[in-house]
Length: 203
Ligand code: GRF
Image 1 (spheres, rainbow, N blue to C red):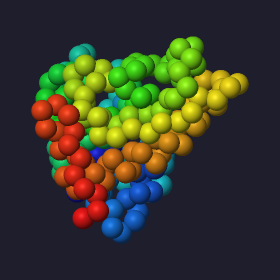
Image 2: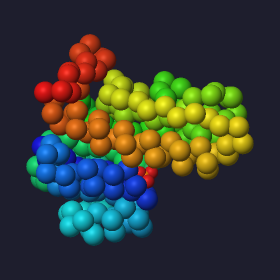
Image 3: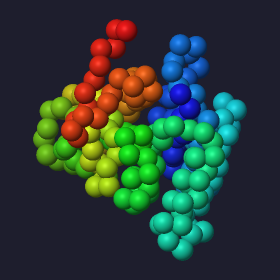
């Protein structure tokens, strides 16, 4: 299955997907990485893996729609059937989300529906929750909302700072995202009535 990845920065989740795709029996092939940020570190990582990259700098566009149309056309032209967001920091309009309905997936660093938005680790510590984690979900127009494909939990430990907690969650993200991408590409994470029905992973 051909997939595209959208990034804005470091690209460590993208790297986890690149590494997973290197295995022969993994069902996805990354055909394009798009960044809205020309300085994204992830662009270098993708290039090192010989993956085609594109920069669509949102600052060069008059409207969100015009920016998204360019991204959409590039992804279409790449032949990708699915789009995975990996630290992509632009909110997508209902138009783009509609074009890719149930073929557009995001990873978010919290156990949704708790802690949508930014600064999730800081807010988890402030709230005193003892479990935190990450969520992979199909994208809906509402930010950090949509049918949940998978989640991974990590403990919040005494003495955690937002940074130490972020590091623990990130390690979980790097395991969770490749597992969820696999499910999606194998058609084993289908949306049924706005929840994801997971199929057996043994066959
Ligand atoms: C990750 O924590 C991801 O969940 C969030 O932004 C961060 C991106 O990190 N959406 P990276 O660019 O994948 O390293």
